[in-house]
Length: 263
Image (cartoon, rainbow, N blue to C red; front, side):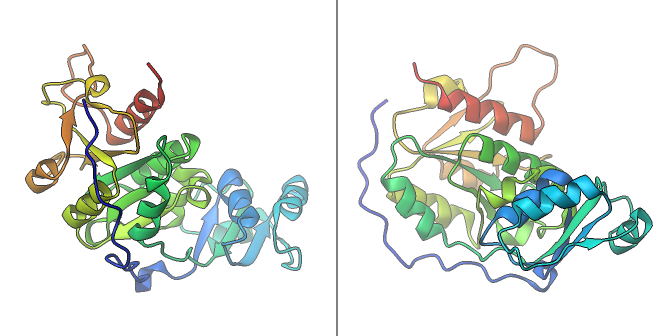
């Protein structure tokens, strides 16, 4: 399949979505999540609570801001600061949200990298799934995970814990209109493949050389009609089992692995 020849991306079309009231500082917890946040120079951390001496040493070594004092607290005090049921593993960080990143910045990065890949989510609403996808995207060095702001939950401790540090390495880019976002990606020379269990061709047949966006639909309904129509191609992940579809985070992992393979 030949690549589409596209004009360079037009700058300034997409402004970053402003953080919402719910996106103020939140508690991030768990070992990998907390240490990754402390090591990220773009992340502002107001407090660090630790109830394990060994973890305190690891946190001190990871922290970019060595002036930020760690607070050694009891397990009871740590749990009192966090939401009920938070699996903290002995450490938590009160962190401000990362600065929003415009889609135009991602388009500019993708245009110069023929091996670039990213994920686009069409109304995926489960924070566990979004976090798991961010974790996988970071593992495969994806350029971003793009979501529609209005139908995507804010970044909470639950989402960040599921991402296991992936938030610090793979940008979560919020856009107002997903169809326009796909159009901008295509103008930047990105081949957009929508994953659909009913598609005629397998993913391997749909992939091409060059920057690629994998577009995945919601947990229940899959891709919306307009989203499907704005993809360059539709493809399925072949499987022989009795279930019609995969969990969206599992599908993202398999698809990223597939397009990362060289024939």
